[in-house]
Amino acid sequence: MRKESLSFLESYLNNASPTGFESPGQKMWLEYLKPYVDEYRVDTYGTVVGVINPEAEYKVVIEAHADEISWFVKYINEQGFIYVERNGGSDHQIAPSKRVNLHTANGVVKGVFGWPAIHVRDKAKEEQPSMKNIFIDVGCSTPEEVAELGIHVGTVATFDDDMMMLNGDWVVGRALDNRIGGFMIAEVARMLKENKKELPFGLYIVNAVQEEVGLRGAEMIAKQLNANVAIVTDVCHDTQAPMYDKIKSGDVSAGKGPVVTYGPAVQNNLLNMVIDTAKTNDIAIQRQAANRATGTDTDAFAYNGLGTAAALISLPLRYMHTTNEMVHIKDVEAVISLMYEFVIALESGHDFRYFS
Image (cartoon, rainbow, N blue to C red):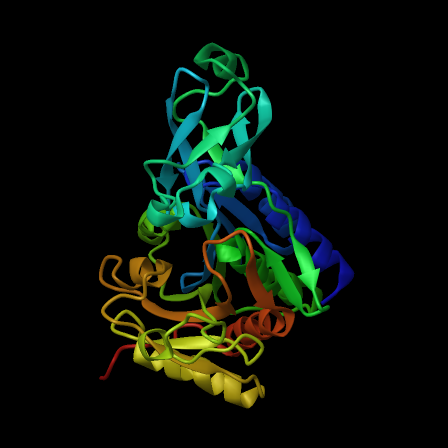
């Protein structure tokens, strides 16, 4: 991976982009994307779309989601301790002893999730972390002190964990789900521009908001664009680490390539074209099956209006919704290559109807 791309990825991952408050990350992403698109759009809730060939009638989307899980301040007690509510699928079990950033009008306020010492806990009836007992300490003794810092009910908190590399090949950090996807679709746009590829259709590079609370950003932008084709990229579970059940979650391994999904929301003819693209370009792929819905923005595009031909290309990821999400750099490069090769091979006006 080129040095400039990796530098952007690090800055983008280290920046917070909590669900419903994605603007700072979206601005950063857009600044990176601008040189590679003809125009851009920002919708009411903050989804950003870069467009190549905006005048074309036939519309192709490559999409990721921009938001990360986080916490809302829900209650501040008389001693100044802060209790929280989930914003997305935040994991209460990993919270104790984690550092957090509380995002206020005065800037970032540092805090920690507190937890009683092992010495004072009763092993016979040890209490486990739950939404009832995890709390944030910002070094205050009263609610008034907390308020003076700019913290109030509704303030958003994110974990304070920056990107790092492991063993030269692994990218580690919080919120790779799914800002790594935003990075990958931006890299496709960059490669198209730098390789001077002329597309016969309009390409819409979509970084959607609010996926973590129900695909909301994708639902809105899918209606606005009414595209012909949508290739969505998100993360899926690497099931090789301990405590994963391959019978339940499938046999997926980071480092062995992108994952294509079979399921009702995935248009079969489009999926076959993606698989053929991988074969033609010697890109190794893995397969998984989805029960009813994929749980990704693919569903929002597929079932929009009269239906959009949609497919999902996933990036294997370890330890989802923790602060140590991990992806293999070879998989990142392979997903980018697969989307890029698919886009340059696609013909304008291609009819993906199931049969005719």
